[in-house]
Amino acid sequence: MVVKLCILKLEEYKALAHFHGTLMIVFCVFNLTFSVVATLGNLLVIRALWKSSTISATLKYLFLSLAVSDLAVALVPQLVLGVNIAVISRMVASENYNFDIFCPTYLTIYLFFVLLLVTASYLTVTAIAIDRFLAISLHLRYQELVTSKRVIIALTSLWLASTIVASIFLSIPEPHNLMVVVVIQFYGLFVTTVVYIRIYRVARYHQNQILTQRQLCNDQAMEVLRAKKCAINSLFVYVVFIACYVPNSFTTILLLVDSSRLSIILANHMTVFLILLNSSLNPFLYCWRYRELRRSVKRTVKKILCMTDSG
Image (tube, rainbow, N blue to C red):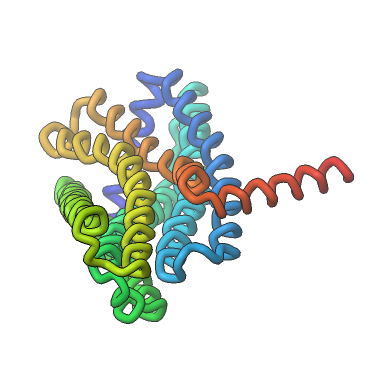
């Protein structure tokens, strides 16, 4: 099954390079460029998160997991995809169709890491939403029930589940593997959307309590407001995440309906770029929504620039 999938993907790249050569070159340049952007951005964010003192430990671990998966996406799938397209486009242009170097090992490893890291990112965003819901619902009990140890166990399970999903994708034939992708994407979308709707309702309820009934003491009110702010910050991550992932869900469904049309295959590959682009956008979101992270990143960049100037 792995060899068949590898050959199928290789045939798609060859066809796209032959009929849409210019667009694929642009696609290649974008991937290589944003691979560098995502790598530098996520390295800065990981350092800032590690040194942060205002973000709770549990939320910090979740954001670190997302930043690490984003960094890995930039270093492996996005970089490899850019190189793949460049090499295949070059070979097609010179009418060299000896693509034995790509299958089965090279493209199989690439596909495995794409599924592993994208699934890990998807599940981590869902976990962040659930964590924020618990924080705004449980109030002071949140720290008692949601501990760092439990979050680490949850993240370990999350990465293990992502590895299993990637293995399943490679072990079953199309279109069944595409159905696995669609089910996971829409399930995560459904769960995360429902959770954020619940967060909004709980936040509105407690805000009305604070403003009108005054049923909460000052400590509880501050805790609720702090949780609400964190929920809003994570909501921005979720909105950008959905904007990057939903197009791929729809093009994957179109592939399930008709996998022979080159226009649909091209659209699907373009939406894969959007998924990989999400790894470059997240660092900017962190810096925009969290002042401490923004200041830490600025200090680090200034130190690097000063070292460069002095060198």
